[in-house]
Amino acid sequence: MRRLIILLALALSGVAQAQQTEKATFAMGCFWCAEEAFEKVPGVVQVVSGYTGGKVKNPSYEQVSSGRTGHTEAVQVTFDPSKVSYDKLLDAFWLNHDPTAKDRQFCDAGSQYRPEIFYHSEEQKRLAEASKAKWEKQKPFRQPIVTPITQAGEFYPAEDYHQDYYKKNPVQYRFYVTGCGRYSRLDQLWGPLRKQ
Image 1 (cartoon, helix red, strand yellow):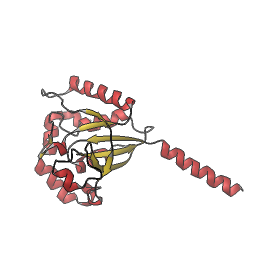
Image 2 (cartoon, one colour):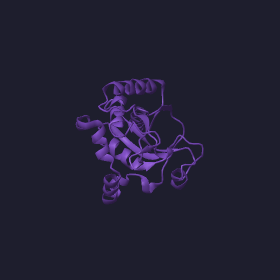
Image 3 (tube, helix red, strand yellow):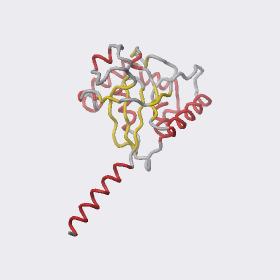
Image 4 (cartoon, rainbow, N blue to C red):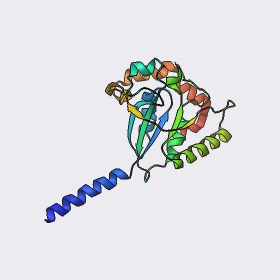
């Protein structure tokens, strides 16, 4: 009986721990790069690359990359709010994409690379809007911020070979981000704010 009580307590502890995480969804161009950016944030439990914001169920990479499904490449971030706030995730989002571009990011063009914040609750919406307003005042560049804030819909995980691409294919990934001019453009936009 005592063993049963201990097992039950451990199981309930696991459920409680699982309930302590929250989800956030962001699109910021290539999801490989978004994965890298968010996995470096302490308190992030998991980052999954996928597709959201479109009209086709269970789309493939080929379908999304055609630009005809309405989806954008995105990441779904599972985080522990006792270790990292949604505000911190929003800062990581802003400083790792070009908010002056509407349907493109760096060398990737098309609505499937559009940046966007997808909120999961009214509180996330409020924080996202406040964060956008903050950066509209503080931004070190002149162009307007055009990144939209939208209610989250269905999120479809991408194929396995896209998950953790930057870890599994470091040489190809480095070639991609360098050739695409991602980091140089981010440094040009945000300057020393990216080093904080």
